[in-house]
Amino acid sequence: MTSYKQLEVQFEEPNPKKWCVPLKEDVFVKFMNKGNFITHQALCEGSLFSPLLFGKFFDPSDAFPLWEFDSDVLLSNAKSSNNNQYKVDWIQTETDYVLKAEIPGVGKGIICVSVEDGKVLEVSGQLRLKVETGTKDWRAGNWWEHGCVRRIELPENADWKKTEALMSNGDLKFLQVKIPKIPPNICDEP
Image (tube, rainbow, N blue to C red; front, side, top):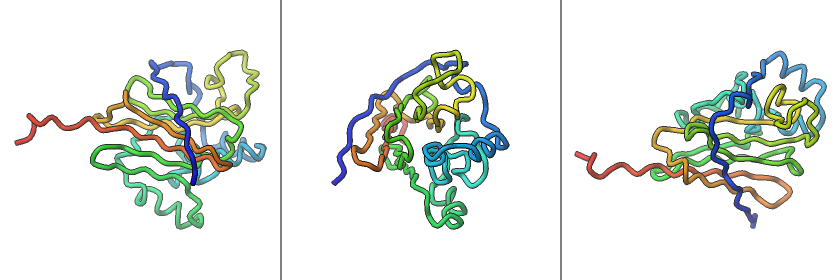
């Protein structure tokens, strides 16, 4: 049985220096062609951090309205063409929004889960601990050279202050993020 440890979820204000350089498709292709094994694992198709997660290129540093889509529908073409290598899933229950993902390539890296301004869930991982960009924050500039990210828009009824994140302790790293829904007000019911 896999055991999990609780990750601290950070609550942040918007930072205009974070993710300020967008990842373009041509840059991604060039980067992957010269990237190392850990980079390929973290950004490979099927990874939460992959710009190709949704079947076409989408910069993972741009917030995506994930819970507006059913995972089976959004990933159906990509799953069938890639022998079901996708290790990402999200569901919506009556009480919670849940994101589950295998996190490849970050065994020794650092995974951070944060909520920005109560509107965006951010999962990031620093792959290269030594950053030589002239800044202390690896997320500024060409962030993909140092780590990976997936930013997800939170639904309006997400109780983001109660966000919980768990990471498995085994060799394979699995992340589970749960965001409770704000219960509908009983007075609002007809």
